[in-house]
Amino acid sequence: MNAPELYGLVLTGGRSRRMQRDKANLEYAGKSQLARAMELLTPLVARCFVSVRTDQLDDPARAAYDAIADIKPNLGPIGGIHAALHAYPDRGWLILACDLPFLNRATLQHLIAHRASTRVASAYRSSFDGLPEPLCAIFEPRSLKIIEESLAEGQQCPRALLSRSDVELLDLPDPRALDNVNTGEEYAAATAALGATTVAASPAAAPATAAGITTLRRLNVRYFAVLREQAGRSTEQLETQASTPRELYDELRHRRGLTLAPEFLRVAVNDEFGDWRSPLSDGDTVVFLPPVAGG
Amino acid sequence: MNHFSLHDVALQPETLRNELQHPACGGYAAFEGWVRDCNDGRTVLRLEYEAFPPLAVREGERILAEARAKFGVELARCAHRVGPLAVGELAVWVGVSAAHRGEAFDACRYIIDEVKHRVPIWKKEYYQDGDSGWVNCERCAAAAPQAPHRHGHRTG
Image 1 (spheres, rainbow over the protein chains, first blue to last red):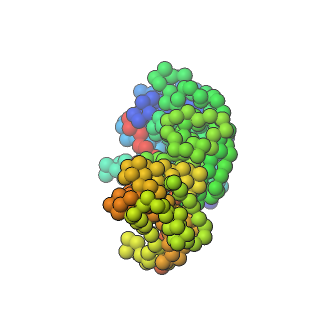
Image 2 (image 1 turned 60 degrees about the vertical axis):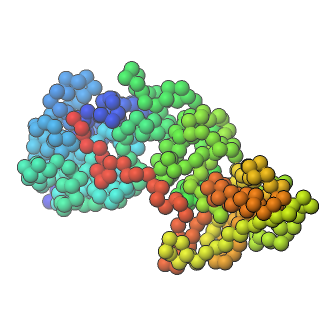
Image 3 (image 1 turned 180 degrees about the horizontal axis):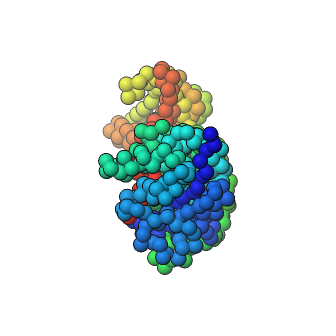
């Protein structure tokens, strides 16, 4: 039996309270998240749609694409997934959230290549907690009935739904590919990590710091103790748009998988204790100091 | 004199003590920190110290200078090991000489307390059960953002 034809759905319907702005229009490297997600997904599927709330049908950013409007309002992502499966119930659906700035084509191709179409869904195992990631996953026609049953029981969480369903769970080829962005601070870190050169021109306050965002600094980083082990190295040199130690740490946290929260760390710049918010200069050497334990 | 030093070989308390002899001093106090075989209820087999040398020495010497100014002691010295250490080995040595015993004791206590909290030196313990861990760091992971629901639900 051939697998059902694959359609794609990019989820953008949410109002982003934490970002204080429409997530779909956030830009990375000059492209909105929505445009970037559509560009990644469209060549890999037979048809690609954007998921919208009914009140977003006329939104110009979304009107450029084929849209599927929620049938039931205010259900969150499950409402978008449900509307897509309801509209084309004999297709498989690759569901993709638009707020995944680290997502790449290889991650989507890997998912499609390892799709198990006889199961309810195929999804990546979160590198964060081992549970299925519903917002970069393929939902098969079988899932419609399960979604409708869940909604009838008042359950709206797609992760919970996948967790108790027959799901093909895949390991992420790139463990950071599905890191998402929900706050202005995470956005600043992501733009720094991705080397974005422009920020959305919305006057509603771009969260990334305006000054210095286009300036590349060459910085040296030294790692000690637990951070050295997590980073897998003692030193590195990098060119970055991070303008303060805090921005640099946020960037390296993503890139190197550092687990320590910055609240527990001190920072040293050029062999002296420094300030998280002080501007960095080209050539500076930065050390993030884990909690000490001499004596 | 206030001198803080890092060593990757066994500390020599006799040599360190001799550095503190001074004709104006009638009191001398020293503290030795040794590697203990248990911590937090777990059996420790050995440990490893790692330091960030330029800043460790600089901060260590600041502490020694503070102790001299605060307690009026004549000489203060601290030496700290780095690298692998076995149970029972001398990990840190603090010595102070002063006109009288009171300020020598007080300064010694001040120095070791501050060194433990401020000097960029880290300790990794290796336990009998095969596990290991960086002391004071194991509970510092970032709070799980939105766990267990990693993807923020649409809030609309």
